[in-house]
Length: 312
Ligand code: NDP
Image 1: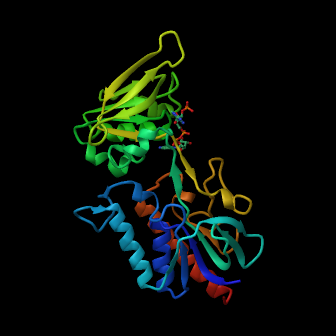
Image 2: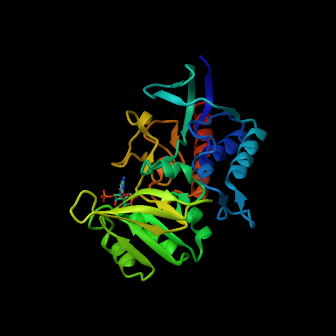
């Protein structure tokens, strides 16, 4: 079986940055791109908050650049998806959806997190055309426009408050008669004159010619006073939670109650020696491209140190 010195799972900013550093360090990284080559960023359009691009950059272009930069330093990029991991003994063994199996001395888990969506066909239809799961990424495009945020937790409240600083009007669509967010976040939302909270409301569809122009919503579905109506919006933001892509590794590494991989202090070290976690799979808080890239860098430095210490 092939044994790889530094295997990186995932091809978002964390995975590719790890590959750039590992490549330059001469530890011959192999990147498995995974389910969504280029990572979550490829679901957005333009990136304006990644340092170094004063005029912004198309998300796909940035991911292509990162990929080419990783390849320039010798990273090998493969396209299979990991389906099984055995981290019980070194070298660690991974199985992929094409049936292949490899072993590795160090593993960088940069499999990211997936934003949850409601499951409406219209979310797919308008993805990148008014539907987003990241206010920090895309909010800027809705200056002086009307937007809706779905969710009643801290993320939804935070995103609604952030968007209220840009947009002319923010609807917060909450399925329950109350917000689940912390008291402080609730107050911020409820006191903001630009935010209108639509309690006990669910979205059933979106409409619009060239992108989102509105949402069909239903108030108190199934009750005597059920009412279906439309709201006019240009942007529809999902904030109903993220799911870290850590399931395969749960038997081995420590995860928190939400499934995020727990790392040691400020390092990307997991409790399995030589196995590191970088990016959104280990970050319930920041979830930004730049923070993911930074943790990918740390993971590669750790992998290099580990290989050197073990003479591998
Ligand atoms: P949460 O799981 O806390 O909240 C998800 C929200 O989405 C809930 O209001 C939930 O409704 C709603 N929801 C879920 N599924 C659907 C659906 N299908 N349709 C409509 N609504 C839906 O996720 P968050 O991302 O908000 O937060 C995750 C964790 O991160 C939390 O622990 C939070 O406290 C923390 N966090 C902290 C922040 C801070 O401190 N500044 C900022 C952001 C997050 P319901 O209530 O009905 O289940």
